[in-house]
Image 1 (cartoon, chains in turn brown, purple):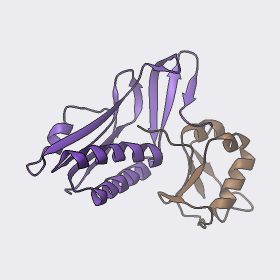
Image 2: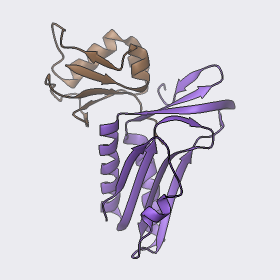
Image 3: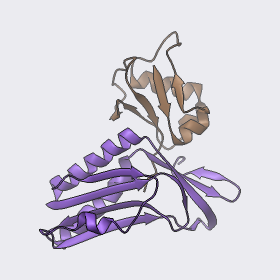
Length: 80
Length: 139
């Protein structure tokens, strides 16, 4: 289970992706992933917003996660 | 609407968008170009750095083009964003539409850039002389 990281989330974690496959309890939903990320990297919880994308679509917290999903952490966007 | 032009590029050539939007059935073309401003809160900006989640950014840009064409009768749509290091005055984004009448041109063009800024996964870091700041990251 790989999680892609962008922008300030990449700076906070020091990585452009996180491999969660070795975790004993892998996050089963977006909500569990958010909890894991915020507790592992408290600086993430100070951001204006934090979204998760699953397979290239914004995902609500109840969306379940499969190990082959493309998962990404989306910090506040600032294009334009 | 004809197939929209949706791209993420290294460098924006603002000269091509007019030809891309030009269209016999259209009475008007509206284009917005976003550029790098020299100051933020009285601090001199050296450059901006843009990064994208490319596959998702392109699909979100496509959604915005589709939404715009369902709200207004548009003939052509262009949404193009640059990534990488951009100096002061360089173009970083260009959006534009052509349509039969000007009202839908202006409204749709504003919708494209306003929605892009809200939903498309692209991030901008401001580089100042002594620090860098991810824009809008913190409240």
